[in-house]
Amino acid sequence: MDLQHGSLFLRTHKIVADKDYAVTANSKIVVVTAG
Image (cartoon, rainbow, N blue to C red):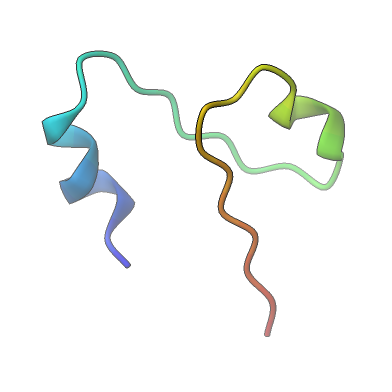
């Protein structure tokens, strides 16, 4: 999954990585990965 490449198709984008799920508040898309 290439989030940097896919973000080119969005008007505004912000990619955030954190251990706190509170940063996902008001998000339109949330991707959670494990492993």
